[in-house]
Length: 130
Image (cartoon, rainbow, N blue to C red; front, side, top):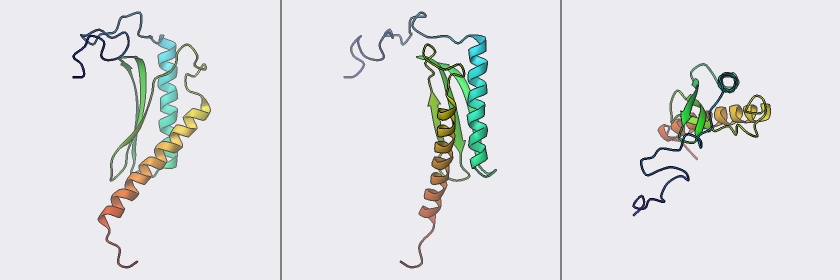
């Protein structure tokens, strides 16, 4: 029965799925460049923690609720991991994502990607003894 009511979904979104233009925050050109630079720094920091076999990428795009940033890691084996951000443009620091958050996200992504490899290898290796 979900979706059968005009009140279903995100607040401020019409039945057609469009949000009023005034409700969606827009990035200025400088804010977009800053966000792209910041997300690239997270990706670069993540690469520092991982061997070359891991693929790390970053992207900034517009979402339903405003600008969204994504950093993703594809390990050599196992499932990809990612971290997404929707910056709070009104209360955000100048760089939109604080230095502490950037480091924390990079470490978390690297650890999650390494765990994906470990889990993938553990599933394919049969222990010889316990």
